[in-house]
Image (cartoon, rainbow, N blue to C red; front, side):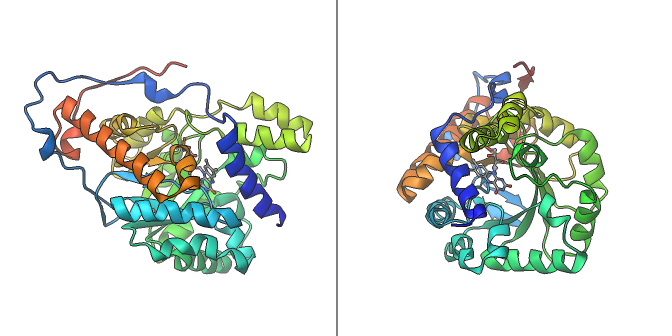
Length: 348
Ligand SMILES: Cc1cc2nc3c(=O)[nH]c(=O)nc-3n(C[C@H](O)[C@H](O)[C@H](O)COP(=O)(O)O)c2cc1C
């Protein structure tokens, strides 16, 4: 197992065995207002939506987590079978490992065998900025082809890169690269944070490009500073042990990201709300605040290591909770849900 494979394995194992959550989950600060007279029948509620030209049965995306090491294949397969079953979207983890080592292509490619309505390829921005234009476009095509992706996510994960013992904190030229890719690549590009969030100022910069969507990836859920803290501890890396603790809760709360990004882009760019979504009520809260879909990672990791049945069970609960929340605010469609009453006061 090379260094990249080892790192991928450690990320999954740490996320499973240690508490890597931010100290405060900001979805607890969002309150949907109960409607005592909903005037709809629960059975009439529909949850289907269109995202990037694809129809999803539920406004849910399984966020990219893995691939690039042997067990990653099984995790991706269990998630893919569930995504196909529920007709929801699915991303894979960074595909850089497969670009560097052909033997690892399988660990991502497996999802091609499932009829998933929206598949999302993934690459870190800090890797991409080091390539020239020709290589960026070639690699993007290879990654999309690998999983037959409908969309390519470019991941901004500078918090992680800054804390990771072997991190690559290259951010210079990132916006220009995103702009080029969004104009010249054959598939839609989405920009995805992975736990530190996207603010209004960055969203306004991104709006000038031709990107198709923003996954705000805000704070409140999995903290990559926490994940890297545990890795640094395993390696005896004193500075990153310290930095991992210092930056554990760094980032913009996911609910705030939705509001800031929405305002900065006139709500013209679809928003995926990832970061701390635990259940269907959190999904409902994200949609009321203005997201088009919610992204879920950590809550599906443990079931994904087990089997597809376990993932199906979890997603079934989440969709049923979403239905219940919609009923209790009197919304029988996602359009109506977006107009439900909500209070949000960030604390923490
Ligand atoms: C084990 C693990 C590995 C991840 N790897 C990636 C990755 O390779 N690329 C990426 O864009 N996001 C990655 N993520 C981030 C998730 O997609 C998501 O943005 C983040 O975990 C926040 O969602 P959560 O609070 O539901 O976990 C990973 C998350 C986990 C838990």
